Image 1 (cartoon, rainbow, N blue to C red):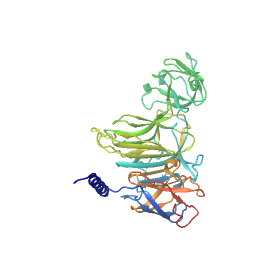
Image 2 (cartoon, rainbow, N blue to C red; image 1 turned 60 degrees about the horizontal axis):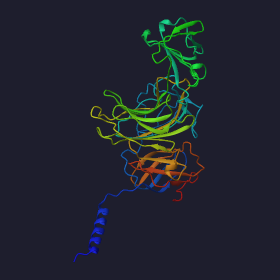
Image 3 (spheres, rainbow, N blue to C red; image 1 turned 60 degrees about the vertical axis):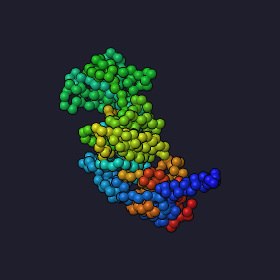
Length: 433
């Protein structure tokens, strides 16, 4: 006789067999760390579930501290040169320096629409990016204010600091830059104004703008406003990071924010999918720790990934990154760029940039739980196996006298459940937590 107990035992055995045949998966487990816990020293991380990494070294590692001019990438990365090495957009600076560093690299977005630093060519279905930067500007307050005038109508020389007055509107603005047409005089001359003085710099409630068609007068000269956007244009189109297929048919994905709207970031795959609006926003006047996990989609399939992290807060989104008419993988990576101008003095300071073509990485932060790690520092791997990793320590801005915790991320970007406690003052293996 077949009984209910027989059915129960048969189901239980089937479940056990199914579980036994299912592929094993576990998060990384760190069991020990061996070595001298000091800056630039190599330590060995022991444990399990790290998963295999084809190339132990990252694709690219750069920090402004590593060379006198702040440009040279580290030999700890597989790429040891920028791909447009003839042009490097930035100069060494000690004006704004990240904790633990001696210098940064500064780039003024108000003086050029080129991207900061320079281009890197990395063709990959996956990327992990970690960088530290300080934005000494506010994209809402530091918008470019400009107008277009008829070049042939200018009766004198326009100088920086001149006050310009609209003869019909009564509007005023103080000149901060003049951009003559590159070749065709009929294209007009652009005049940019400060955001601190004049009626064009006032709050929207009390603002008075120049008018299209009116005569504008400066000290001893006049000109005609031919601006097609109502007399004055404003913008701060900020693109902190952008990844391109950089030839026809063009394709790209970027993080962007429009200062004339608000500080909110958006993720935009410009040619293949819709823009995704984020709750993260530009945070000026502080060192920002930004990370990206990128995965290319299949053709016309919404299974790509662009996970953007800022100071420990994440904004994850799935996207179509490749389409039938744009099947190529992205390969040209650019750091911050501003289109259509910003106020002069809108300076970004870069401290470091780490890029890899997998989501594997090793991080250190002050918190025992990864979700609470707002300022993580990336470590530089030199060898990598499923159960053992060696890294060169990079404390960055972390205090070596406080509690620090180590995290290993596997191929899927999953870290150990709880941080492994490090002891910066201990030369030998710390106590397992």
